Length: 433
Image 1 (cartoon, rainbow, N blue to C red):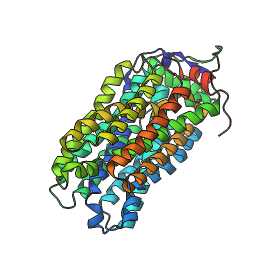
Image 2: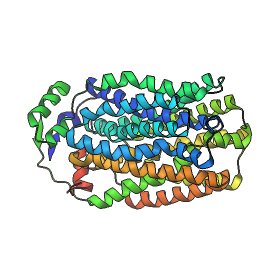
Image 3: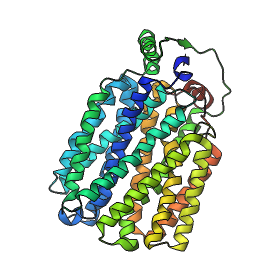
């Protein structure tokens, strides 16, 4: 195992800043895509003559693609390098976001969004791993939180696009295609990033790793680690935690989040698409505000607190919501508050794997955890239509409570430690994946 002191103890420089923006924009596109269809599905079923189950297939198509793309591209990232996959994954988004907008029937729309999801799913392990491997240890939590928070900026922009184009009967075609166009310049910019020095060192390419470090910090200091850190947990214990926590979170988060336009339609804003788009903007602001509040404390109070407290508030609010049955205009601040605290869990469960596993399997494990989370999202999306809104809240409250128990007993603390220290504490030695 090697040490990278110039990265861990260095400043947040030009290369890291560029890496932050390019990684964050991948999450931005994810937020845009997974939010843009929630309002589109208010009209697509009637326009494309979708049956009940065809509607569910379209709802879950991107998630199915992500479930496949995340482990496949995540594994490739560990095998052939981060940089080679960093732009390729978004090519799927560009092409198939456009073909989704041009779809004329169920099959074209389902296949387009499934393949688009394949690329988005692959971006999760690659972007988060790149950001984690380039970040200083004392600000890594803040940077990773900020990166994930871009999801909600994407969700906000999707609501703006819906608001602008909702005057057209087939507004969803314009909003889908715009998402693909936005991604095009990002692919070109990603081709110019350096390879991760941690990945290079893990493959024995020490001179190449030193060259990248020298370009970043002026110091080439790849050294073999001589430090020993007390072992806390084993590989499989930690793997079970990151998979289970993210799976449980997405059951509740997407089980509700995917249906916000439908929920508000049923709670007093039926067929008022402009009002629903405005409320979606407000909810997205709640998500972004959650990150603004969490950013200053992520590297002070740590990941464990954010995870436990976030799951606790999710459980509390969903339980109260199922009992009180809030509707009408009062439902807006309720879901605003829920999304605000929900994102504390969402961000940490997303980037936990990149802080806990060794370089040679880091992106692979992140891909596996992403796939598990998408399975949770699909489960939540499928569950919701079978229950009235307030019954669904209770179901997701139970899921959140299970997540809370898992976090209390299993959540590690990765705050202010190098990636290598976290690996020694929680996952060393890795079985071959």
